[in-house]
Length: 220
Image (cartoon, rainbow, N blue to C red; front, side, top):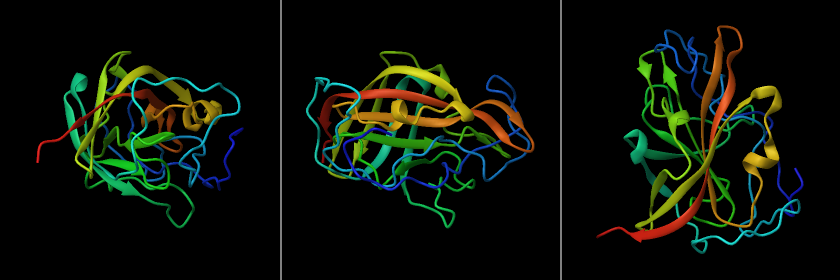
């Protein structure tokens, strides 16, 4: 990537959901634990004030927030609300994922920015498991203008607006576009997509691009 920060890259990809179905197909009947909800190689740790060298700064509708751990995410357009779990790296150097036993949980790349902080925060979730649909089953149905609300430990709710939803095959995953800084606080929601193969898992990743548009204070 061409970023004006120094960081180590993950040696693998996000380890998460899987199942033998296409994006529009039925629920799963099997699981590959090494399939990926996220793709490419996100930075293991990012500077808090990173800037992209390949794109000019973009004025956001809300200033960046201070760092604070996210605790819950809500996406009204697809009727989901879920707890957020911090994710680290596994022994293979890959970003982990919520356990398959908790398919309705969402994971946060804790060594990157927190949602609302300067930079690009990343949330990942399972699409499905052997027991049926998971939290991000309908992620691809989001549209430009939909909102994503992330409740943080500081009792602020960071509100993001969806810019676009893309599906990328894993061999053509655009690291710069997905993980690179844009000059404003951004958020990525990621899960599996494309066709399922019993040997290789899902063929693609669904990525939702969103940016911070407002902040609300949660009542005590």
